[in-house]
Length: 246
Image: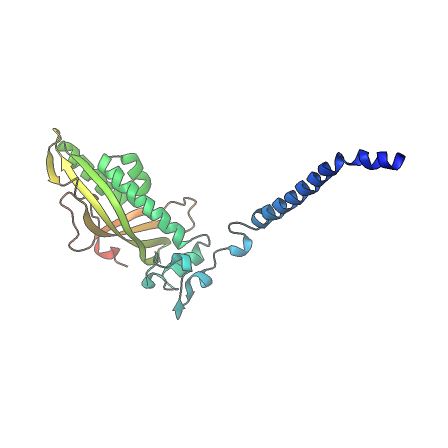
């Protein structure tokens, strides 16, 4: 009688025990899944530091990482005077990160020049280039003209050449884009260009930065148009000089 009562008294707890075991198994599976994702190292660690020799290869066989293919032209990889030299001088330098910033700067400079935003231009341009842009904005304002620029698509942003000269690094970037640009007078009437028609444009922009500077910013130091790509209403003034070629 007592044994029967004991067996009967366990029956209500059997389903509960089964559920506890089931939940414990599910929890174990979830923990394993989380560990497989979160337990792995994500991002760059000490062993992933930028290594110029690995990124750019030896002088006789220059290469870049797979993720940077298409961002860097072969002539920019030259170990002694190109990106290899910059990478040795600036261990944290990354071509991919530089191009990301250069693409952003391209759009920001186009917009800032069109709107006459001198403060933004001051942060993004070298002193000489800023003087050219400032003069162009002043001349435009004197004629009561308003610039309208629309960056439809940036097709290409590629490092074409690089060098270090007198302690300053220079990187020349090829931009190929579809842009609409126009000038309107004080009454809003179209004076030059077409704000609704995208035109293909390609330009070489050179950025500079003093090696070892605490200021991480690269600043635009030269704008060189490719032949035959000028727009009626120039979205950015050209500043090319003979010694800007690299």
